[in-house]
Length: 125
Image (cartoon, rainbow, N blue to C red; front, side, top):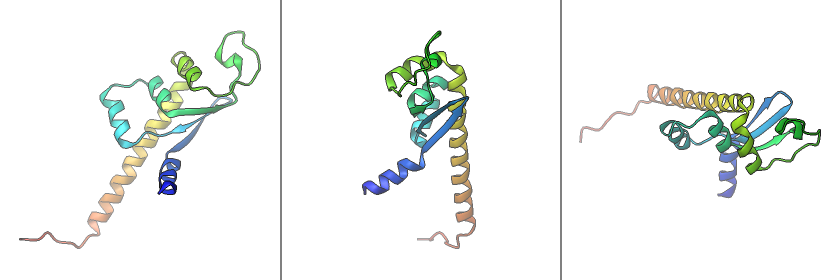
């Protein structure tokens, strides 16, 4: 069963390139996405909830006058800096929202196609 769970989680993985940085993460489930909407979650908060990695971030990306040292991803650090990085949060949240809309449209089309092709009739019992 673990293999199936891993497959499901892998399908939700994403990467988004912002300038020289690559962010990685997981798309929210449908339930999580609806909770985001109900709670009026900000774009920065979507990034906080979904991103779990980065590549190519240097100290100078995080602080003024920082060095060129590459910084390993740290969730606490990411959560701290993302609120001041609209140039990061916008592309991340746009990707999450666009992928959710695409997934919802694909599901709707699949359901529509399966209903139109169905020859089953309701019982009169």
